[in-house]
Image (cartoon, rainbow, N blue to C red; front, side, top):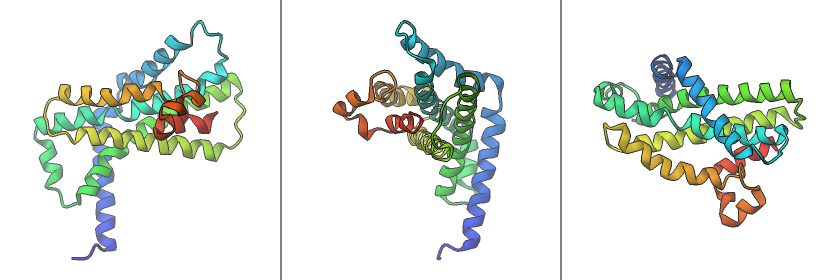
Length: 209
């Protein structure tokens, strides 16, 4: 049967229902938001302290690190848990397409990460008087980065296991090396020599430079 407009509306409604479910269960908790903010902040400070770098130059890197870690963390945890509790089977049997299911799982991580990044951007503008050339381009670039990293987390969550401990090491095996060729801790011109131009963390930082 051809894919109709009604099918599209049904899939979008289903994806939004899945995103709302994930938000209610996994995201709307103070400890999740605090970990999404504090971990990238302290990671960046660990490399910035003692280098006499202006705060203004640290904020683009902080936003890039936050988008990478906050967007790609929850799905590799939530999906294996739902497999173990058999709630994921209900989602698969729902009258929506697999694409809508993947989109619904990704929307929650995207909105979570995007809200944290915009919060940090607003704090940087208020406290440090950042000079932004184009706010629409910057916010759009941050949104693309968050959506990219969210889908990266969803891809790793597709690993067929019910154990979270089997997914996170695989993701960190990719995520941590990307962190060090992203232009956050090493000047981005040097990162281009080691293939940094092909990885998304570098480009998520560049709209904020």
